[in-house]
Length: 465
Image (cartoon, rainbow, N blue to C red; front, top):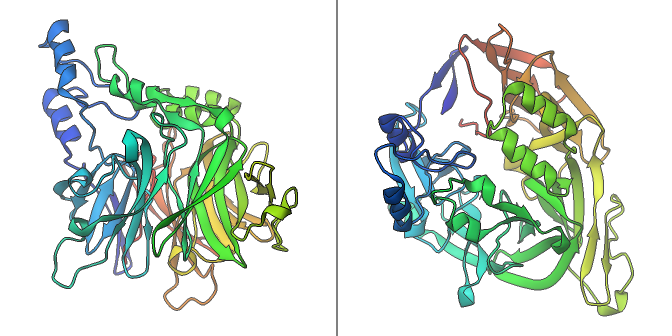
């Protein structure tokens, strides 16, 4: 876990390993003990092949290696991955406090590392579960804000709505979801987790989470809608062409439509390449070579009509004047969605998106910020005007930034009145890594804080006032 602390005009850098079971056991036994997302556990050298085989039947041991993100629940902060385990941490000292198993409180097999947090501190998240009739489903859960009686909000977590799965034994990989003022949007992509492979991934053959992924592109992409209050699933078929997707940018309502902005790719190949490279299954030269072959992610806008009439079959149902996205009803009642591409390029892409979330999350907005990818390699910070498609860029040779975090000026009025924080590394050079502070309006550099030590590329984080 990393922290840059701003005090009295100075910046101090802290880092400390989170003492999860995965970390402690690996350090104690000097090997990877629990299978990770891209690394399978190394066998115990003290066991022969027969004892390894029988130990497999003790059950799947899920990792608690919380390396993806950190976010608040009540007055506490938790480091998270995408399993059912989250780890409470002290954000002042970076000490590990306790491990929490969400399965002890609610029917869910894991949660994403990208929850939605309302202004009062209410947290919404999604994960797959075993639903009715022993079939898979996706549960959206709600964690209330800080309690007056000082009790743990996690103890009051509850399922607010359940969304059906397109396939009974193959859930889609879930990385994020959309939420507007009144609706949840879950995009079920054809990137699937084969449960039979998953359950056998810890056998003597040695596999990991990534090896359980496959694609069913004939399914296409399904767009599921549910209301927030009360939590009710809207049983209507919204569908689009097959895409791969990790991150939603923003979701909002406008005149009877739900507008969904996200980062998406055609097909499954890029998603697997992303997972392969992100989990360091190659050295730096191999990563760059593979990246040259990878398709580029686009910023896409889908528009979902809520007021639908059967007599409108074959007609574009989208009447918003500022988008070319379409929605057309087919004879079987399916509403086919075609997106508007807000950002795309042959040698550049946009990922790890952020917005002025506190003011514009779930609302009609103008600006998004993200990593610019040059054939997958993150070598710039981009600002995108989603209305005009205008872009601004910060870039420096041999510098590789991380996800930009938007921090609004305390008395700021404009949507982009604030700064961006990003960690920049320079592998293969003698220059130190640094925290970069950019003016969010024009992407000009305000300051940087250099760190004379090796820093890894980071995934996600947060700004704590």
